[in-house]
Image 1 (cartoon, rainbow, N blue to C red):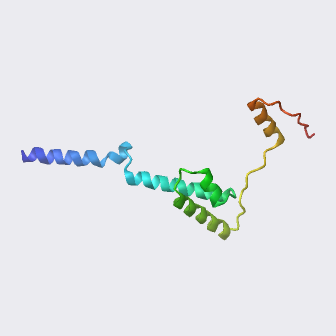
Image 2: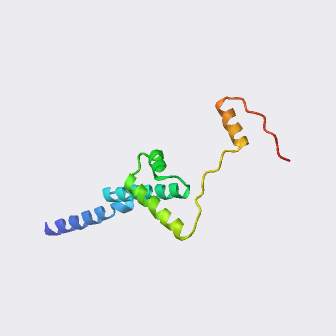
Image 3: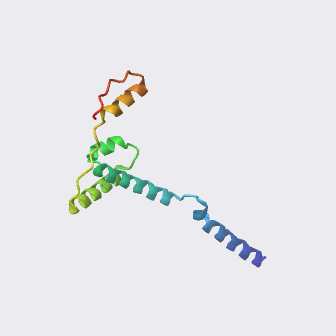
Length: 114
């Protein structure tokens, strides 16, 4: 009886120890993942020349505190390395015409530059 209990205890420990390998996510791992994602969003916003407020408005579901930490870390990194932000490019006439035609509006004539 003692041997059976010992064997079952060892089997249970091995089975529960492999939960991380199977893909079962613990609460701590899920929280760490959400925090890392929010920090990455904040860093991306700073690199894209967005303010913290714009970042919060665009990503309402992400953790604001972690997003701010990511934004601030990227801001410090960019200052130390004298990096310029990468603002979004203005849409070109061709891209605007394609977007309008996809919605159903007639596309304006675009002159080619040759």
